[in-house]
Length: 232
Length: 362
Image (cartoon, rainbow over all chains, first blue to last red; front, side, top):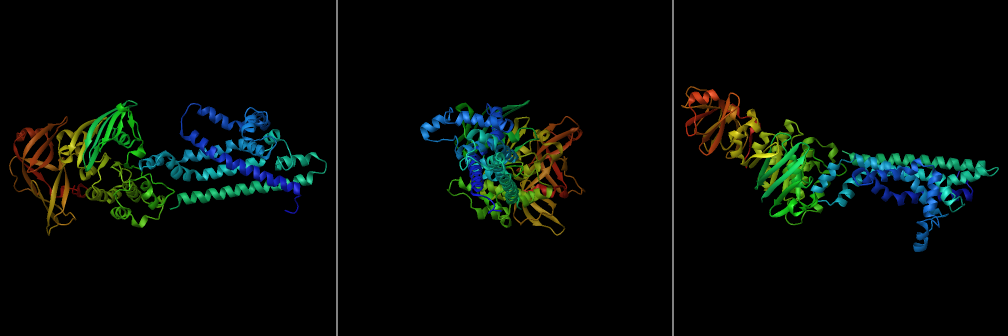
């Protein structure tokens, strides 16, 4: 099966994994923060933040991609300054694909972690504070370990979503082999050329395998962590 | 150490307005559910921000709303034992016990082996809270709070979630804490039996107000506390030294009011115990009764009489250095011509002091 993939196909697989991994890892701290804030704090604009986080789930992906282009494109109102000041460019780069993937996967990640935070009894955090622990320490030693299964589930869900992201990615960073051509984009491209179907099919199999592996891994990790927490 | 508390708080239709001082020893905040006990403790711990208040412990102001001071819980150093334990499920018993050590001042303090020994939890150290019984969890929670080296231990009905057998298992540990560590404790309870066994000072709360406060023996022997405590539960607490074990299954005690025989109490000779004598178990006579099965007849003077709303009356009798309460009828008060200053004999059956009403000294 591995030999069956051409260099181009391999590049798409490798790119997809890289894009998804970075999209997941970089958005994870923000995801935990937003999930915690939504679950625990009452502040002005909480519902607005909640709506914004969930928007990519409901909007057509092409709209999200276009909005990203307007914002982070070379002429975008954030992108032009990132380029001028820091030399960071998202447009038509794999980093842009990672950005699109993380935005699209963010709601799934936040939902999973938020559920886990809501399941942690705030009374445990109170108890920790009466033992002398400052808030950040309470979070690191009580809340974080208890929501770990939720974080893992959220991260893997986000990874799987990022692997499959197509609409926003192709709109934002196009479909450049080796640069922004992820698995779904590659499948799409192969389907556009006559005789490309066998190649597309091989990549479909790869997609299925990666998705299944991610799901199984998440199940296994969550259960292992939950067992460690609840163990007698 | 002294804790002084002055609080005012309003929520829903309830208003709390309390003012009290807690000296060293165990100060029991006693009252029915809904009297505001937990609110007070949570305010002391810093988990609740009262509308108005000032809390000072050993000269350190932890709360002063007028001056805009309100230390967060983690800077107050108040060990808190919750009703529901609240052990960290992902940590072992040992890690739970040592959780507060990171922040406790390094000076002196109690060491893990001593607390483990005192609470009898040596066999549990490597286990996780999920597999512990209710009584074991509560003992670990107590140890965890003590090991954070607090200025004061707050206990909010630490036994309420346990059955009678578990309560009986933990009470002796609490007595040992009180007697051996000298750590001041603010103990919330709605159980007179617990308060009578543990408290050195009692603060009686009703509907958010302090109705009585002072040394435990005095407050519990105040006829006026009966309506708050409940008539059947009202009773005085006296200190008694175990002086002998008789062959026929009785224990002989020496009290400030004379000798007392009770059903066998298992304790070393010479031990000073607290006996809670329920008011409804005490009879009064104006002459020394003869030909009577009750073994204990103590001579004393009537100090105070409180006529109840029903047919009953509560009479406080001074017997030597001790105070007893007797619950009798208004009719008897009239027939016997009882009045403050009148000599009486208090009659108590040997079998009427139940085992749970005999506790260690303090």
